[in-house]
Image (tube, rainbow, N blue to C red; front, side, top):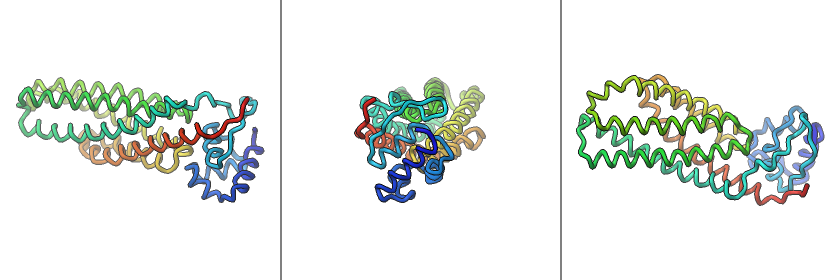
Length: 277
């Protein structure tokens, strides 16, 4: 289905359901500007966006033969039930990651207060929470990797994998420095500064990738993206890294909610009847 036929079909379906463009925005979370441009025939949207709109209208998607100037039929990229659960697990893992980060932040303060002179038990506790933090982040990031497949967002997938690697490396560095006193950890100031700049840069790119989900996931993805970018900006300054921890909390909450919204979307799409080829 090419433009302007696609736009005309969308207008007809919307009016058939007695919906205004604003009401369709509320049901689909696709921006009003995107809907206006599709209906006017200005743009040829991604198939994922078309699927969202058709699902919001309660209609089955009918695939058609396509060429390079048409909507690509990527139905096989829509996550099956097993991967849909991956997104839900990612949202739960995000909550665990958030809690573990708060606990580790508190332990970091305690470590500096004690000048790094911890007993073995405290080091074991810190190591355990670091492992929990890294593992939960892996599951958390996998949710965004899954969404990147659905919404054809290659940037989101690439940066998610890079963030997993960076998070694991920083976790290892944190555990390794437990063997030193606070004064001795000054030797690791350069590695930590590099880690802050790298993670900050990746956070900014991750934020941009989240904003690109706006057509499919709505305003929440833009909010999450902006908060992630702000977090990254403070991290790359190094000296203001502590501000990033304050912004990180609402950013993670927004991202967890975004993953749950992704799960709801996949559930809705999977239960929408599909036409046979």
